[in-house]
Length: 574
Image (tube, rainbow, N blue to C red; front, side):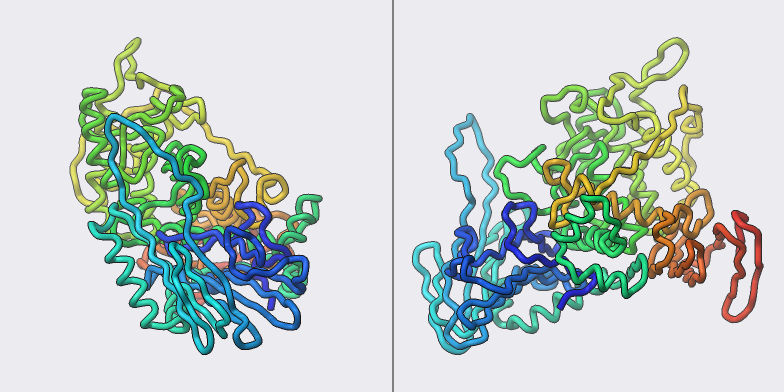
């Protein structure tokens, strides 16, 4: 069954970026699902004899699967990565008994000897176990699990490192044992309930339901081919939007030593990945989280704040030793150990010292949506430390205080970052009732204006799997696109909530549920003929709501008309 929230294909993935990602925030996998591929060896069948092949990823339940027929037998497999139970679970089934046979093993793809003066080893442990139902047998030959003539088979996979646990092998064995005890069906139910508690908060329809369902009857690769040739597919845009939310839920979840999403989220196939698959904080990491608050995934923002706390501690030492400054600093790249020193060899990016300032703006961003004063108080030291560094960092030139070194070939966000984090800090101090030095209110020497360039993302920079193609694959493109689509539908800046502020003419009909706005508001909207036809706004914090729309409207507060109609572009407060 196909639907508007399903990616599906008639052929196996021919390359890694076209595989389908699953993840629980920490443990991820890319599912190729080929009947004959050596790397997966799931069914020892020649693909030339296979018919009715279909693989899919269902965004409504975060389960991926494959179905095909061979010699009158229907084979299927489905997989998911469970956050509640911390395992990847896979089920193999067939329409006839004793037809499931396969061999499976784990391999790294690259084994090399590295000789250094010193080396720190991070232990990695993976535990995989198989279980059958009904007929069939299992044996382990070396590193390979062999299943023969089973009616149904299950694989449970757990992976841990010493980054989080002193004895990762014991943790993996426990997780797999508990998963087998729960059973596949219960694992699946727990996984879907957990995932939907995040994903189901937002619904988006662009165009009519009939047009969306009709478009979904084509495979995703067929729809992408049409999009690359300039055909407008509104349902594909909505699918792409929800795919960004799916990827954030799958790559950034709270937990023990939670890590934020890297350049590739949690999906990477290289031992030496592009840019080290690190946390690149001169826009990429920040861009990963632009959608977190507006798309009703505030909890997915938490790993970034956890990472920032560790980065602050190291950044204080870097600020003191490198710049003789107080506060804390971070440069353009960091890693799981929260390294704050300059990294890499491209000096124009390497010596850029604004990483901490840019990251710190997310603290205030989260508070604007959540109103969580306890969070703001806890994160205040991080925000203050990033500002403190920039009070010490400038040097005097011609009567002005200027940054030195002052560079960034990749962007022009040098001064706006400092100005924004300073403004955020003063606002936070006011909320928390703290007295801070008013020197932060000094004017900036020059004013800079930002410009946004909208790219034809689906046409030129997207794989058939809908993953962003930089090239190579970088996940910030997916996250940034979802955030941008949200800003088309609702914006909350300067104390106003603008409804449908930038709706394209081709999006003349649609609806959205569950978007979030600053001040603690949740919005549902419908529109037709390019204009707002209705909206429901829920206030979580009891703040004043100021609305702005293209046409006049009336406001109904629990059966009472408050204000309206009003003229276009005039804000209404209630």
